Image (cartoon, rainbow, N blue to C red):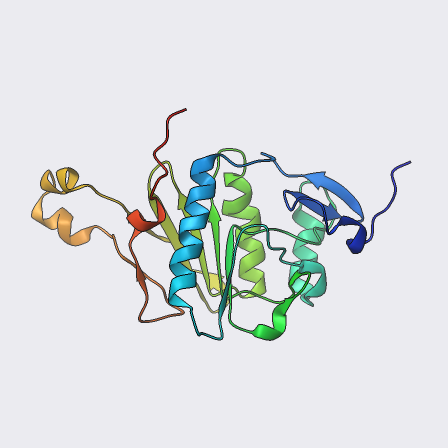
Length: 217
């Protein structure tokens, strides 16, 4: 019979696993591809550089978001009814979080709603990031949610309004050659620089997120 684990038993395991009702369920894939890791690392650095000397903190990949420590009836109901394993998720691991309430940051992870969350998409986890996790962050009240796609070099940004995420805006990376082929009206309509709603003076260029992500197989 499988042993039921407490959090302390599990805390030294890889965060590529979920702790669900005391049992370990592996994420897929167990290890991300290098472009995924580079995108996450680049994004972390962009926010970390901006947030120096700030009360807000950027949390890198492998940081637990401890849902079991957050009191939220709507979230509890959603997890109970909709998770494909039909068991409540107690901890998840976003690729990056920004947290401005220092009281939420504990030695074991983040124990309250982040202000911004980013997930880097992969083929095996895109549906989970786009639907399941997005709804979790919406119910938690995460103000801004990013879906980062290193294959298409795009970033989708969803902003929370009245408890719901609005339709996402997609920001692209275009080469000068690509821009030279566009009509004047197209150039006025493309979205490149990403304004960060929770920090009005911060703008991020998508190309800075995707540095060193074009790698051979």
